Amino acid sequence: MAQVQVACLSACDECSAHSLCIGPTRKKGVLAVKNPLRAEPGDDVVIEIPEGRYNRALILIFGGLLAAALAGTGLGWLVATGAGLPSSLTLPLGFFLGLASAAAGQFRYFRKANEAQLYPRIIDIANKGEDHG
Image (tube, rainbow, N blue to C red; front, side, top):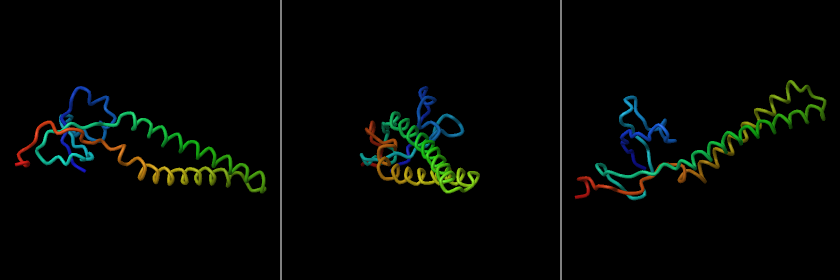
């Protein structure tokens, strides 16, 4: 991992990592990136922001949470009608249990499977800094 100082360009407003890196001055920001090329301090680097992967990940996260919450609510209703329990108890319980189980599953999935793919990464060292000797 590396901390990269990013100069704000005209395309920054459309970038999916904009909210992660831009500083309060809107001129420069700092972004944590993967460093597979082993760039060193002082290097000018080119980074890649995985725009499409960010968008798919957001759809999976929010869509999965919504589907699990609705499925939990439906299961709560089935338990309420089948067991004769009050639906005022089982519906909210099912909703939150579905939401919690989906959140735990998504946390594990994105933590393990997609961590390397969702981070911005250095793809080229444009100019080597003075630390290279």
